[in-house]
Structures are given as C-alpha cells and as structure tokens.
Image 1 (cartoon, rainbow, N blue to C red):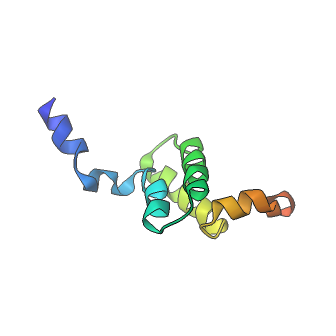
Image 2: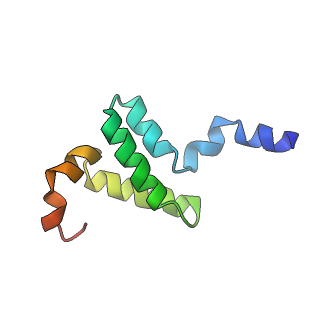
Length: 83
C-alpha cells in the first residue's frame, strides 16, 4: 500500500492523465462553467490508454479554442462537420 501512495501522490504521475484538462482551466482562470464542461468532455473521452485520452482531449479543446462554454452555448457546433 505504501508504494501506491508514493506513486499516486506524485504530481508527475498526473502529467499524462485526463485530470490535466480541468486543472488547465482552473490554472488559466477560466469560469466555473468552462471547468465543468471541460471535466464532462474529458470524462466522456476517458477510456483506453491515458496517452490516447490526453491526445483526444487536446484535439477537442483546441477545436473549441479552449473555451468550451462558449462553444457549447454558442451553438456553432450544429453546423460544424467536425463536431
């Protein structure tokens, strides 16, 4: 058990984990709505290898210009072939 605590209580463990996305929005001073929406999308994509999850989340948030609330509420996704 002690080895697990040391492994998972290390910030480096989470550098390649989907939790980095809600944290990114917190660190950038985003609104609570952006953080919540980012967490929903990240959790939705959170299956498979962590590297794939992080890659896919990065693609998604870059497509949203790192403003998930504006993207979702703005409705532009309705006419977007990529969405």
